[in-house]
Image (cartoon, rainbow, N blue to C red; front, side, top):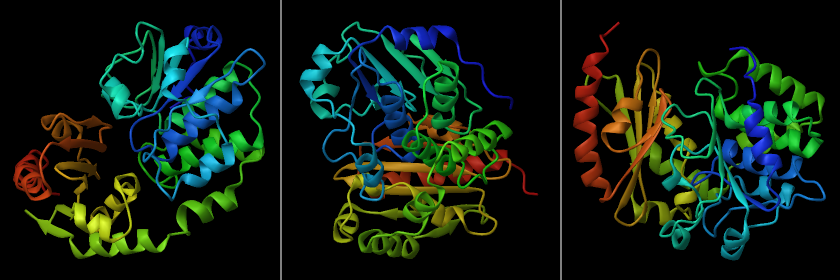
Length: 334
């Protein structure tokens, strides 16, 4: 993929804002956080006063250092009332915006413009302006190209935030979504001062005891089913709580069932909140899973998607695992 062309209308819509709220998806990962924080930092000037939406309980302990580095101004409910626009990043649907439970029940945008920037193929284009590049490896890469096109400065801190998102959403530049444009953007961000060493330490080699204990659960609960190409693991509400974790700490654990040799469809079932089960789907090789996620009202990318079911953990497993085994029949054995 060549570097994406940034539409002028996207830049113009952002430049018309003075008091925007910058938003990413619920349970933000490093790409969502990096894009949101990088956008807020790099676009700041004397007439532009952005706030970022990070409701209590939505930030994982592992990624909290990114917010500590950026020190953004956090949006309050009152800031949503006075905002003259919203910039939504890395979020496929409006109802997945990380605005907090109280605002989710309201029309928090209330007719004001939304600039929607994303790389999910299932994005519903809910913005007044939509820039969706579904073959980009990360939203941070898109923000990088946006800042370049708008001639906004990229300081070392912003470079670090954007590099974190590019690196993690391509799984260390190892996924099929890793295009040459992502590598070029990452290299440029290193030249601009991205702290590669500390990011690698913090993101890959700094597990807290609680995260380690949760991984014990995930390993113990991993199962291989069907013809050996499907694997899943799970963590119930009590198991997550006993490990000292919350729903915000669930993300990369999907790589445990995914890492098994021969597995082409991996799933992680987690009941971060009582009675609500989140499912992470991952496909490998020629297996695409976004269609499977859509059957359960989810979405995402062709090989990385998710869904949430309004039921307990075991009920979700009983519903989804048999369907996943059946779904794999469309992909012939090698």
